Length: 194
Image (spheres, one colour):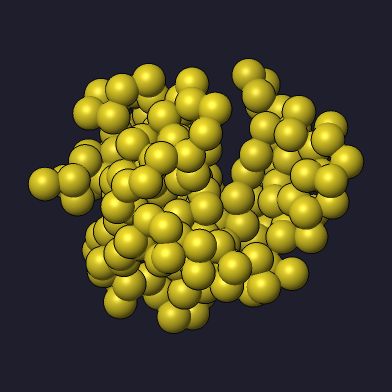
C-alpha cells in the first residue's frame, strides 16, 4: 500500500505542483536513518514521502486515527500514532525499533506546523533524543512551496511549485545534550533553504 500511495501522490505532485527533488543521492540506500524536515503544512509529509526513494515511517497525532477511513490508510502505510504533549513510550519504542532494524523515520523537529513560512519554531528535544538513542545518521530536508499550496488555516489547495531538498547526513556525537542535538539538526535544515 505504501508504494502504491507514494506513486499516486508523486503523480499528483508532479502534475499539479511542478514537484522537484534535489539531493536525492544524500538519502542512504540502506541502513537506518532519521529524516528531519521543516513543517509548515499538512502537505509536508506527502512531499517528503513522495520525494524519498525509500519507505519512510511517519508519526502522526493519535486523534487522526479516530476517523475510520483515514485510520485504515494510516495503518496500511505504517504511520505511528503519537500522543501529543506527553512522553509516548510506545511511539518512541516503535520508532527506535524501526531505525535500529534499518528503516527510515521522518520527523518534524519543530513539533507542529508554523503559522508563517519564513519563521522557525524552536525544535523539540525529541528528535535529538531519538537520533542519539537510535545511533543512526540524520538526513536534513527542507520543504518549500507547501505553505503556499496549503497554509495552516487553508480549506482548499492552491497551485504552487513544491520542492524538497535533502542535505548531507549528520552524525550525532554520543553524550551531546538532546536539545543541542535538535538545535544542530534544525540549523542544518535552515541552511538548505538558502
